[in-house]
Length: 275
Image (spheres, rainbow, N blue to C red):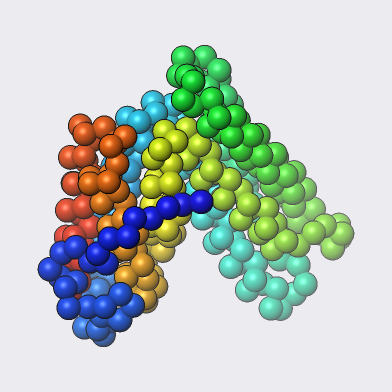
């Protein structure tokens, strides 16, 4: 379970007069231009710096990040195709989709899994303090591979039967969604498992409640209503991560605090722009 320190809800002036869930949403200045020119690049930088800290804490995370990014591309592509399929199913029972790009993305995930396996075998990074984490990592990586294989088998079949009478005998494209959701969840487990155990809760909380939703809603696309609605929760999650690492964790290496401070300044700059 993730543990969150009890801290002040807002730690800078711009939020001083606003309670947690209600802070004058109608007054916020969030435009598509500001998003494309400033907010999205800053969020991408925060994510990059989050990845950078993970790589410094655990060098094998370079390959884990490649796997997660390829999985993310597949997930976002699948979500787009899912919407397209739903639109088609308003007029017909089965949707006709070109799944070639989805298959290519799934094959890329496969390649990154194999690269990660080789690196985890040959790298000398195992110690008494991370054996349990490595065992969980291996278990979750196995599950990712199984889920990806299930996805591949369906997509390969879908590609063969599209526009034939056999399409009516295959599961619906939308039925794949539960597998994709689990795939997404376990990919994040793989990312967290080899973070030092004392820091896992802090890094998992930011990944699940800040990085991942912003990837989907504000980096991959533009969702201003969602961002404004969730801003209080996002800010609380960020401030908890920031305070845990800068003030609360003796286990976090001091030389990396400057990266956390840079991330904090980026987040504050986004908030100041829209308030």
